[in-house]
Image (tube, rainbow, N blue to C red; front, side, top):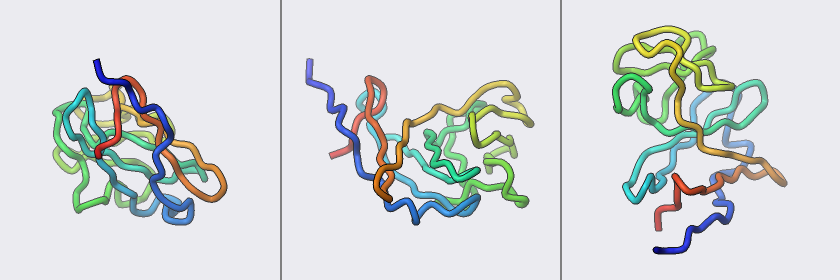
Length: 125
């Protein structure tokens, strides 16, 4: 069985994540398959999620890297308008109400954002 790479992976400069504006997208290996993920900033915190709706396994951005609703309060799924609460990924409105987005662990250090691989997500090389 191959050894897991659990070293932090550099994602971007902290300044690249603007409060409730845009995102930084990146790929991860989810159980050996490439999957899209994204990072956003909400309430001055960097948050990461797999780019997959909790209702239907489809990517959610309505334009590449755009996940915010019109009021920039919720993460929205472009497929059917489900709204997710940014701090916890909980669906608060839509067909998947009560379900959650799959988190990707992020951490900020020294003005940089890193994501942390685990037994589910590994870096794409």
